[in-house]
Length: 67
Image (cartoon, rainbow, N blue to C red; front, side, top):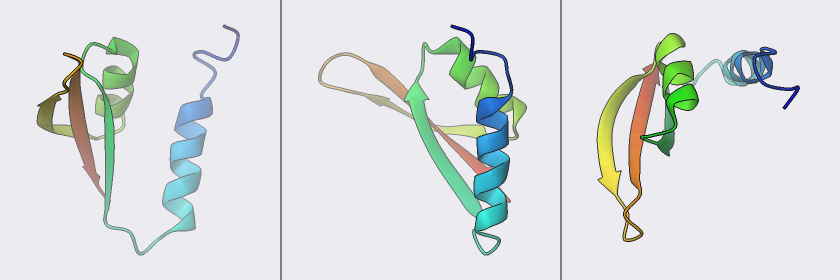
């Protein structure tokens, strides 16, 4: 997995934020047990707002970043 830890997700997030300067909030959801994704969102200023349990017994966490 050569693409991990290369800054691609951070660059994509920065690009999206710059494309829509009128947006004041970004919402993202990931698996609660997906530690790399959780760390990514927290490192980029997102905070957890909700945990959701699916019928398949997968827990999801919703993150919000105010811009």
